Length: 304
Image (cartoon, rainbow, N blue to C red):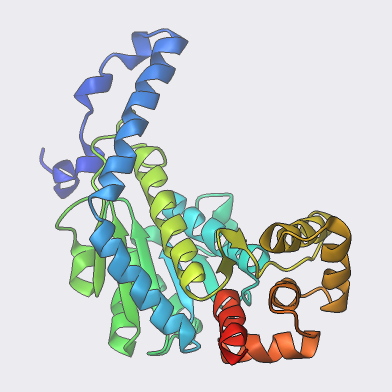
């Protein structure tokens, strides 16, 4: 009996992993690793589309908008994971990048029956978030046809928000509501239908690219160092001081002194040291440079 899901790559039987249940543990692991090697190439094939999506995200965030991930099951959890890492890593407001999962927070740990099949629930969650045309919404679904995600994308599009879709099948219904569609076909899963594996890994890689590249473009990275981190615990205080030292090449003692003199503001400390300015002047340079450390330093050099 044919079902529309039968046509999806993510629901096909992987001929390369047939009889995996008869293999030794070593053979299983080698086979899984071999399939995982295919993922990076699949992601590489859609780099132009990912690039366009990043540019759209940067434009919205720079204008004060928000980045909202919408997903169900494993896809929803990956969105939440990526969003939750942005405040401690890049110093973003917790409201700026958010991950929403079908069924609410309880669905992070436990499945909520029927939530992903409810497109009205996706629409309602978008309305509850008070999405506006300034925001950008990212729908994540391995199949590319999850009703909850499509409902969210459709409602966001109607409101005028920019919409990105991430799926692991080509020609999926999500594309009807996406301004930027990222279809990353990684082939059938090692275990039929277990999309937390190859599909989930591809989604994680794409989400990493979306936020990392966007944050770099927004000036939250200097060289290849995170400089907008929030030193909210002992580990991050250590990392903040180390960041200042690595970015400037000064001694540990000078880095620590700059950290305190800048009122524990990493970017100001770096500008203070590299542009040889006071904390107040560093703040002014950063403000004019829209928070970009390199631009702030270069603008000081131009003034000189």
